[in-house]
Image 1 (tube, rainbow, N blue to C red):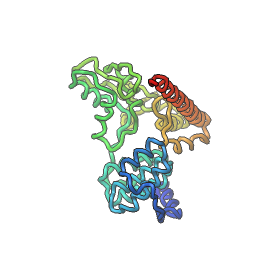
Image 2 (image 1 turned 60 degrees about the horizontal axis):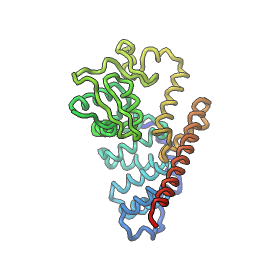
Image 3 (image 1 turned 90 degrees about the horizontal axis):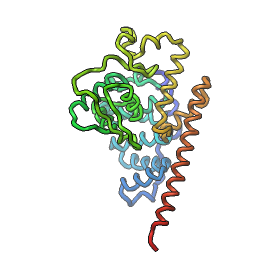
Image 4 (image 1 turned 180 degrees about the vertical axis):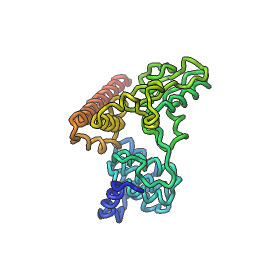
Length: 317
């Protein structure tokens, strides 16, 4: 059955005046250019509100186009309107339960709301891949058949077709691969272009499991039969309830933080709720993430301005 929290979120949104209509105002500035040109300009201009208004218009004009409808939900997520996205996506899912994009967005918004995807009333339970020894074996088998090293992006992309959702990003995958002695990792300034290769080409599976709690790969003996499916090692099962809960929440927070400590616009609203978490360690982690994100963006802005000035100096008179 569907989780009560999901029902409440949808019910709250259904009672909101905006839930009955998407508005009737025409956005005249969007009448003539091609759709993709407008979307591109708004997206790269980080105009999320404008992108939402534009998609609302497209959804009104094309009510029977399932793509325009789920893209509208995508724009809700861009603007931190997670409950609104969940409500609309639930309706779309009931109409088209086999639509990959709808299923993918549903899982994403559930996780952003702090709801386990297993609590949703799926017609067919989706496959969500999380960091595990299975992921390492898939990457190893893929590389074993290749003559040259492959980029991290290629390894990550190779996982897409076998799951409805990857609950980790390239940064997390690299951290996992680094722990497996079968792999060697090159250095590269751009994360996705980091090259990965294997040290041995014989068919040797990993002799152990990855524990989500301590983040270590441990031998099979370190996992009990009871906790094998949960990927929780025996050492971590000895931890107290509060410490286990802290590590779970910490993992949820880290999921919202991107490469080099950035916070994407899609995850910002979800991360903000942890600023008032009763556990000060969690609140401090969320706060430091926002500070790091702001400092990085200021640094990138200064570097971009310096590049522009340098290009102007190099231009001939």
